[in-house]
Image (cartoon, rainbow, N blue to C red; front, side, top):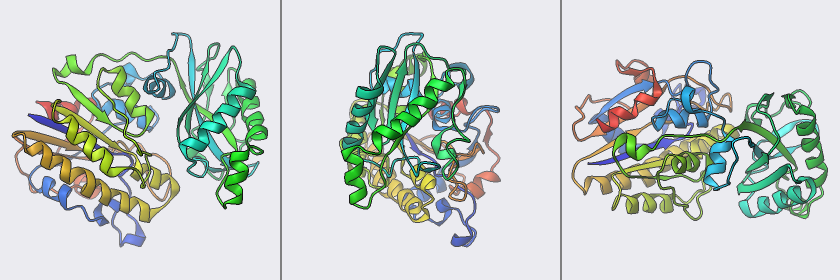
Length: 392
């Protein structure tokens, strides 16, 4: 049996007036997911436990079968695992976003969707000017980077920048233990980055500069039980983002890097498709994580969200499931990790729709969208238990 888990990040949305009261998923052309739903079942699942933040870190742990209440220690340390950063048990890791600011407000959490190559130069400048025996900056992908503090604390409130776009910087600065140090880093980073040649070049080209570092998602080194031992299966995870790849590597799954995978609507869709098809030759479980719908939601781009959903269907779902079918028995589970509504431009912890189809799954002539799932009989309240429906 081949098992495929597909996660279009942030795909779920509310009804949109501009689309005649449909969600982006309902409006988008998705013939492959439609066919799977017609021959499978659709329900809804609570990927975010009560009282926990509605982030991809919490939701991804749930989807991969790990109870976030037992395993979650913060987002950044999961990303550190993807970068193979060796952490001591006392190290505190922060996500370090390169953001765009007008000096008073957070304008863009992604620094104008800065390229990885440009960002590497900016993080290098931060390391040279702000790094020391206690603090070390590590470059990642696009705007997503890390800061390791070997004498830090997790007892500080830090707000994800994608939750506060357009809001005042001073109203959202870190609050708690070591807040003074983190605030100083934020303001000093602005002085360093706003005059950096990379940003001056971006401005001259009409692009937003990535002119400030913003810290959040802090946590200690996590410890996940082996995925292979729990489910008696070998597997590969395909994703552009360090968070998902980090969870995979900590749990003992393979996580190859796909050249040109950016996490945006302009990612290397073909490369991800080919990586998954190649993995199916040797592994029985393949997970594909597609960040583009989420990024489109944060940017408030309805056209990109619809486009990204249609690309997930055409470039990923169709060819990958056809490849899985070629081996005989197969099952596929498709679900977003959380809502990222266009109207809110941030994550929401509502239960999300899921689609389960393939060998041994009785056809319910279902539809895969938020409205149908909202009226479905099957509701999984403990999100980390849903993966058992794929494997049983």
